[in-house]
Length: 337
Image (cartoon, rainbow, N blue to C red; front, side, top):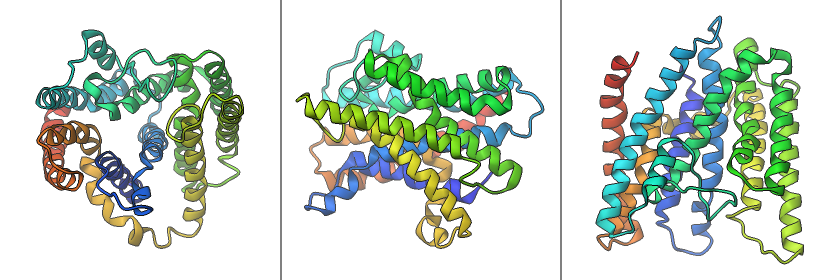
């Protein structure tokens, strides 16, 4: 399945997260364009749900073995390579070696960034922070066949929306990782609903996406209300951490869905001019996303400034991503059918 718009956005988002972590810009105002990495990650959730639904939409029934094998061989080899690179980078930088429990949590996809969200038990191993989103992706992959198999099609979006909002409330009352995962599930499932409508009608509309839009808006307002409470009660406020961080994720997914609907209605006018070239990075976008952080950490250990680090890192990350995705991954796919 190839959709050029999806490929372009995927490539652009992966490179932007790389750019965000490199932070090469230092001039006032101009430097602000590099601080939206969280929004780029949020768009991955939406695209991931779309890709999963669009990929299996033609299946008569969900073949669990086939489905999970495809997900496993796509995620875990890249995860293992990324963890190995993080270990090398950590040794070069002379950093503290994370414990075995942190490694186990990363292997079991049960990690997040504890400095940004409360209730998180384990951080990504060796400070490879971009891997936080992979744990969400993995559990969404696990939930998807359960929802599709156990819930009638006409009720799925309502169940997901209700569970997401209720778990969002539960998380704010008692922060914990499970509630956090489930509160983000509607953001991912919105991609499923977009793909479902597009597969059936070759179009996406506000009426077709109203439940997704409403549920994500409710989550957004919930997070905003908690943010306001934190501010007026003197608990502090920061754009990049809980609770406003959750509002940023929900708000940007909401915004992205609306932009996608409007842009589709316009026939994707100017899309190829603005984002089209980024489609060339689509085939290595996953590698760029999971490999860039260890490479940046390793290069910084040599005392390079931000710009030099970024410029040197680009070819290294691209080569590593190409080898992993275009050379190693096809061999793994043939081995694990």
